[in-house]
Length: 193
Image (cartoon, rainbow, N blue to C red; front, side, top):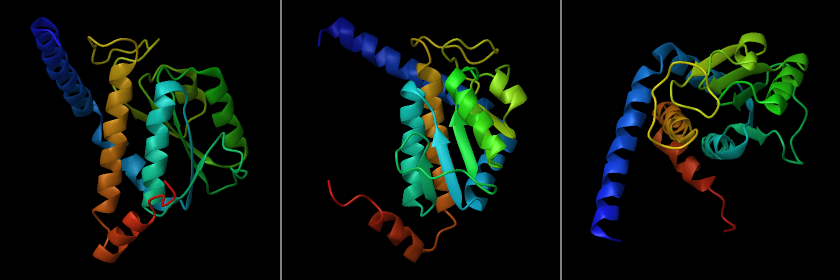
């Protein structure tokens, strides 16, 4: 790598970390408490998201499974129907992704609790459908809210911030585990790789 590209890379990494730190610092503690409580209290958790946001949400689903939760990804062929008492966590950056809004509406009709993780409180899903919202104030593709702006393209900052937020929610949940429960977390890791 040329010296100038190396310097650009170092500058971009420093700025990205600063942006993530700023966005995480603005996530309201009540939102985090709600998300942690929902994950702790619901025996079955369904998750949905698309694009890079979906990949981040799938990573969260995997960690929830490692913690011993019954977890389902909405579009998997083996996903069962939602019923009252279930939790749907949906990540929708701009809060107005049509097919995610549709999924959230069907989940509500089935009696599930819908929690939205979004970079836009102005989105239709937050206003009309979600029972609760975690607002991640980070630049998101097509977002309209005043949030932490980013040097990065499109919704990269939102996606990165959501990943760290989700991982920290897992850490909060895991800190209450006994040493034998933590051993089970490791045992739940896929063993056919």
